[in-house]
Length: 190
Image 1 (tube, rainbow, N blue to C red):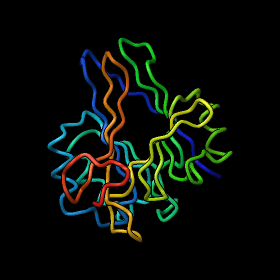
Image 2: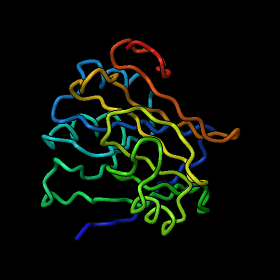
Image 3: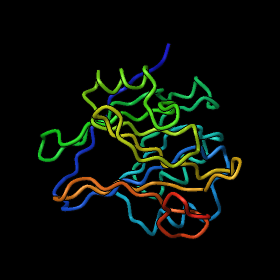
Image 4: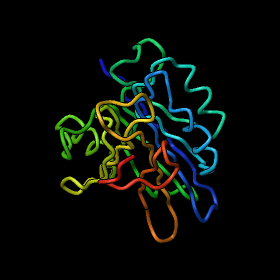
Protein backbone atom coordinates (compact mmCIF):
# COMPACT_ATOMS: atom_id res chain seq x y z
CA UNK A 1 0.00 0.00 0.00
CA UNK A 2 1.41 3.37 -0.98
CA UNK A 3 1.79 5.91 1.78
CA UNK A 4 0.32 9.37 1.15
CA UNK A 5 0.92 12.13 3.71
CA UNK A 6 0.10 15.80 4.00
CA UNK A 7 2.57 18.56 4.84
CA UNK A 8 1.97 22.25 5.37
CA UNK A 9 4.64 24.93 5.04
CA UNK A 10 4.05 28.50 6.21
CA UNK A 11 5.79 31.05 4.00
CA UNK A 12 5.69 33.60 6.78
CA UNK A 13 6.06 37.27 5.88
CA UNK A 14 8.85 36.80 3.36
CA UNK A 15 8.37 38.75 0.12
CA UNK A 16 10.21 35.94 -1.69
CA UNK A 17 10.24 32.26 -0.78
CA UNK A 18 12.73 29.96 -2.50
CA UNK A 19 12.37 26.19 -2.75
CA UNK A 20 15.24 24.08 -4.07
CA UNK A 21 14.23 20.79 -5.67
CA UNK A 22 16.53 17.79 -6.06
CA UNK A 23 15.95 14.21 -7.14
CA UNK A 24 17.68 10.97 -8.00
CA UNK A 25 20.77 11.39 -5.83
CA UNK A 26 21.31 7.59 -5.92
CA UNK A 27 23.60 7.88 -2.84
CA UNK A 28 26.10 10.07 -4.72
CA UNK A 29 25.13 13.72 -5.24
CA UNK A 30 27.34 15.65 -7.65
CA UNK A 31 30.36 17.08 -5.74
CA UNK A 32 29.23 20.67 -6.38
CA UNK A 33 25.52 20.16 -5.66
CA UNK A 34 25.45 20.95 -1.94
CA UNK A 35 27.63 24.06 -2.23
CA UNK A 36 25.44 25.35 -5.04
CA UNK A 37 22.29 24.75 -3.02
CA UNK A 38 23.80 26.66 -0.10
CA UNK A 39 24.58 29.60 -2.43
CA UNK A 40 20.93 29.80 -3.56
CA UNK A 41 19.78 30.18 0.08
CA UNK A 42 16.53 28.20 -0.14
CA UNK A 43 14.01 28.35 2.67
CA UNK A 44 12.90 24.78 1.86
CA UNK A 45 14.29 21.80 -0.07
CA UNK A 46 12.22 19.07 -1.71
CA UNK A 47 13.74 15.69 -2.63
CA UNK A 48 11.66 13.86 -5.26
CA UNK A 49 12.96 10.36 -4.51
CA UNK A 50 15.59 7.80 -5.42
CA UNK A 51 17.65 8.97 -2.49
CA UNK A 52 19.77 5.83 -2.13
CA UNK A 53 21.80 5.99 1.09
CA UNK A 54 19.51 7.97 3.41
CA UNK A 55 22.54 9.74 4.93
CA UNK A 56 22.34 11.94 1.82
CA UNK A 57 19.26 13.53 3.41
CA UNK A 58 21.23 14.63 6.49
CA UNK A 59 23.64 16.73 4.41
CA UNK A 60 20.77 18.30 2.48
CA UNK A 61 18.74 19.00 5.63
CA UNK A 62 21.71 20.93 7.03
CA UNK A 63 21.06 23.54 4.31
CA UNK A 64 17.31 24.11 4.85
CA UNK A 65 14.24 22.25 6.07
CA UNK A 66 13.75 19.17 3.90
CA UNK A 67 10.72 17.24 2.68
CA UNK A 68 11.46 14.00 0.84
CA UNK A 69 9.53 11.17 -0.78
CA UNK A 70 10.56 7.59 -1.41
CA UNK A 71 11.72 6.65 -4.89
CA UNK A 72 11.55 3.24 -6.49
CA UNK A 73 15.10 2.34 -5.28
CA UNK A 74 14.47 3.45 -1.68
CA UNK A 75 13.45 1.11 1.16
CA UNK A 76 9.79 1.01 2.09
CA UNK A 77 10.45 0.68 5.82
CA UNK A 78 12.26 3.96 6.49
CA UNK A 79 9.19 6.12 7.14
CA UNK A 80 9.29 7.92 3.81
CA UNK A 81 6.01 8.67 2.09
CA UNK A 82 5.42 7.67 -1.50
CA UNK A 83 3.47 10.86 -2.16
CA UNK A 84 3.11 14.12 -0.24
CA UNK A 85 0.28 16.60 -0.65
CA UNK A 86 2.10 19.85 0.14
CA UNK A 87 0.18 22.98 1.03
CA UNK A 88 2.00 26.31 1.19
CA UNK A 89 0.28 28.90 3.35
CA UNK A 90 0.65 32.60 3.97
CA UNK A 91 -1.00 34.09 7.05
CA UNK A 92 -2.89 30.83 7.57
CA UNK A 93 -4.38 30.80 4.07
CA UNK A 94 -3.37 28.27 1.40
CA UNK A 95 -1.52 29.96 -1.48
CA UNK A 96 -0.28 26.88 -3.37
CA UNK A 97 -0.91 23.15 -3.40
CA UNK A 98 1.64 20.75 -4.87
CA UNK A 99 2.03 17.01 -5.15
CA UNK A 100 5.54 15.72 -4.40
CA UNK A 101 6.09 12.24 -5.81
CA UNK A 102 8.74 10.21 -7.58
CA UNK A 103 7.21 8.65 -10.70
CA UNK A 104 4.69 10.95 -12.38
CA UNK A 105 5.39 11.44 -16.08
CA UNK A 106 5.78 9.51 -19.27
CA UNK A 107 7.58 11.91 -21.58
CA UNK A 108 6.15 15.36 -20.85
CA UNK A 109 2.69 14.10 -19.79
CA UNK A 110 1.36 13.16 -16.39
CA UNK A 111 0.62 9.48 -15.92
CA UNK A 112 -2.95 8.72 -14.88
CA UNK A 113 -2.19 7.75 -11.21
CA UNK A 114 -0.12 10.92 -10.62
CA UNK A 115 -2.74 13.10 -12.28
CA UNK A 116 -5.43 11.57 -10.06
CA UNK A 117 -3.34 12.13 -6.90
CA UNK A 118 -2.84 15.75 -7.94
CA UNK A 119 -6.55 16.24 -8.61
CA UNK A 120 -7.44 14.61 -5.27
CA UNK A 121 -5.14 17.09 -3.49
CA UNK A 122 -6.30 20.10 -5.50
CA UNK A 123 -2.65 20.45 -6.56
CA UNK A 124 -1.70 23.06 -9.14
CA UNK A 125 1.72 21.47 -9.65
CA UNK A 126 3.33 18.03 -9.57
CA UNK A 127 6.98 17.93 -8.50
CA UNK A 128 8.60 14.63 -9.48
CA UNK A 129 11.83 12.83 -10.31
CA UNK A 130 12.65 9.37 -11.74
CA UNK A 131 13.37 10.18 -15.40
CA UNK A 132 16.52 12.27 -14.70
CA UNK A 133 15.18 14.58 -17.43
CA UNK A 134 14.75 18.25 -16.44
CA UNK A 135 11.17 19.24 -17.27
CA UNK A 136 8.91 22.26 -16.96
CA UNK A 137 5.55 21.59 -18.54
CA UNK A 138 1.83 22.13 -18.29
CA UNK A 139 -0.45 19.11 -18.69
CA UNK A 140 -4.20 19.71 -18.79
CA UNK A 141 -4.05 22.57 -16.30
CA UNK A 142 -1.47 21.08 -13.93
CA UNK A 143 2.12 22.32 -13.93
CA UNK A 144 4.80 19.61 -13.96
CA UNK A 145 8.31 20.19 -12.60
CA UNK A 146 11.11 17.62 -12.68
CA UNK A 147 14.45 19.03 -11.48
CA UNK A 148 16.46 16.36 -13.29
CA UNK A 149 19.06 14.45 -11.29
CA UNK A 150 21.96 15.56 -9.08
CA UNK A 151 23.22 11.99 -8.88
CA UNK A 152 25.46 10.00 -11.21
CA UNK A 153 25.04 10.79 -14.91
CA UNK A 154 22.52 8.68 -16.75
CA UNK A 155 23.08 8.33 -20.46
CA UNK A 156 23.99 11.82 -21.75
CA UNK A 157 21.54 13.70 -19.54
CA UNK A 158 22.60 16.86 -17.69
CA UNK A 159 23.14 16.85 -13.93
CA UNK A 160 20.66 19.45 -12.68
CA UNK A 161 18.48 20.63 -9.82
CA UNK A 162 15.59 23.07 -9.74
CA UNK A 163 14.53 26.24 -8.02
CA UNK A 164 10.98 27.40 -7.40
CA UNK A 165 10.73 31.09 -6.53
CA UNK A 166 7.46 32.41 -5.13
CA UNK A 167 6.91 36.16 -4.85
CA UNK A 168 4.31 38.84 -5.59
CA UNK A 169 4.73 38.24 -9.34
CA UNK A 170 3.88 34.53 -9.01
CA UNK A 171 5.93 31.33 -9.31
CA UNK A 172 9.11 30.94 -11.40
CA UNK A 173 10.63 27.55 -12.16
CA UNK A 174 14.27 27.21 -13.24
CA UNK A 175 16.89 24.51 -13.69
CA UNK A 176 20.56 24.83 -12.69
CA UNK A 177 23.56 22.81 -13.82
CA UNK A 178 25.70 21.15 -11.15
CA UNK A 179 28.53 21.02 -13.67
CA UNK A 180 28.66 24.72 -14.58
CA UNK A 181 26.84 26.37 -11.69
CA UNK A 182 24.83 28.32 -14.27
CA UNK A 183 21.16 28.33 -15.14
CA UNK A 184 20.43 25.37 -17.41
CA UNK A 185 18.20 25.57 -20.48
CA UNK A 186 17.13 22.80 -22.87
CA UNK A 187 19.76 22.46 -25.58
CA UNK A 188 22.59 23.37 -23.19
CA UNK A 189 25.60 21.08 -23.41
CA UNK A 190 26.11 20.63 -19.65
